Length: 203
Image (cartoon, rainbow, N blue to C red; front, top):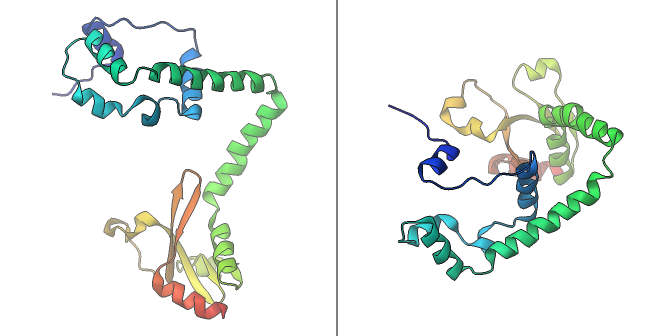
């Protein structure tokens, strides 16, 4: 059997009051908190570890125990979030229809394109690093698993997950450069054998 207890229901069962906030307020406070990093462990402590140390039974016991260890944490976190909300207030007056349109275009058009067609940027970067040239593959070369060339070396670009056995559904005979999409860009992994070839190429 499987079932789910929602947070609101847990609060009711434990007879813990649920605070009421105006519509959208918690979303704004949560976003401000993420930006300000106000409830990170360095400010409020490592909560998952602290709750293990706590031996009391009630919410009142927990609050008293916690505040003895971190007497200023709630105030510090509050001030950090308030400062960020004030920053939001300042900028929100500058947001107009044109700015929103630019943001939507960047998300829908530009970022989608970059997310799907970033192979060229990887090839350019590798060519720059090894002081050589690049070119994208022709449709015929692409059908053979070649995404482009660094100098005269054919290259296939694959996500890092391709290295796991389950992904090896095709046989690629050319050198592979692996990439990993990260929050702030793309991590590029060049195997040592290929790196040595590229070093020789750039000399």
